[in-house]
Image (tube, protein in one colour):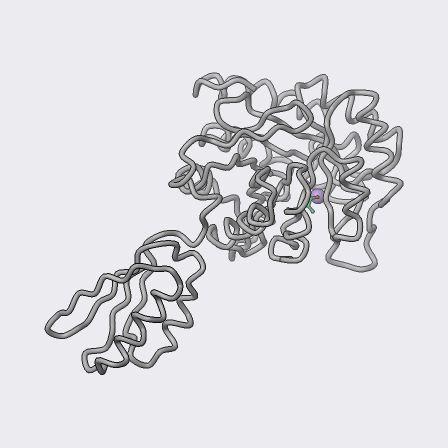
Length: 338
Ligand code: PEP
Ligand code: MN
């Protein structure tokens, strides 16, 4: 961290600041210039609050050199993290993992049938919302505990591990007992109490990017989970809000190589919520694989026009099967399996 002091900063104020940083366990390198005094802070600056330093009237400028995240940072963990979800490995050079299933679980037979269909097409995990974050309180809120039971039954029938969203920490025991990959949805990306709660368990977490979150805010949310003790975090880009109206959100494909450069965590792409339109899902899936994604999470429904949520972005099983064939070709072209 580099701190530039104002030209006329009195000597005792400079000394006071040096003491303050040294008390925080940092080494202070002082460069005395003709016009400015500059401090170079060396050490663990992750806990330094730059806004507080900025509040000092003798400080001209504060510049962070190291990223504020430590545990997710590739600099301190150069090798890729590979996360194990009930025997399915995600990340590194492992095969690309496709998770598929309906937006919402709508019944025992329904989820069992879709699970069978996506499995036949090559999906390695089953998705399905049981607790649903809906914009309207009048919209279907999910089958909740009953939905979790339906997912468990579908897993028993197909052996596909299940991924589903946890909205509230009071359901954590139910999820630890039943769910293989716990999703934290976009709306809860900065629900810090929830992040801390899932940091205290050791189940893998699928952390979705917030609706308007910067990459650094998103990584800091992963850092919350990791700092609470759970290193098993998979990031999921699901599109961000922009001015564009032709798509539900804007898929940020560039985030894939950025996440790979800045962190060691696996990244999964959700082309369904990113686009909001089934017609765009195949193209965005292929783009994500070409850009280096470690996995995809895709909404599939037998009858999208009757779906209880997100029908417009759900693929019919046969379209999903076609996507999987093309996805294989793209994965092979970049030296990966699927
Ligand atoms: C979902 O996956 O069903 C979901 C609600 O996603 P998001 O949190 O990305 O909107
Ligand atoms: Mn959905």
